Image (cartoon, rainbow, N blue to C red):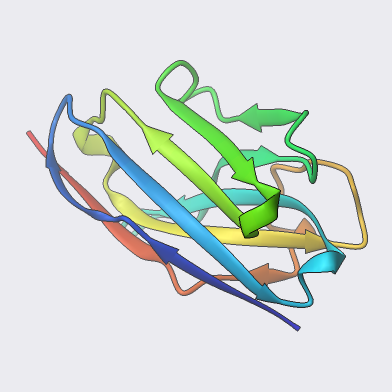
Amino acid sequence: QVQLVESGGGLVQAGGSLRLSCAASGRTFNIYAMGWFRQAPGKEREFVAAISRGGGTTTSADSVKGRFTISRDSAKNTVYLQMNSLKPEDTAVYYCAARVNDARVSGRSDDYDYWGQGTQVTVSS
């Protein structure tokens, strides 16, 4: 089993920045890719960014390219999402996800095996 705990969410004005963290525990040696997804009220969960086990491969949604950066500290079993130039449309609950036993980076939520409880990000205009 793998446990994921997100932190770093909050309220920020448009144009501001936040850094989300996701700490993994348990059978972390099984974790390959990790990703961030988000879900706004009344909308489906959507992909934000993902990173490979070693951090050498990343991918992100077009809506956040150039503004959000995903990174990973394997020694700490932690993945980060640096969010800059935030917009009101970035308001959502942000979830961390882990993929085990498959090294491929993916933007599909069905490919992830473990999920955190989510952290709220609210961007005011």
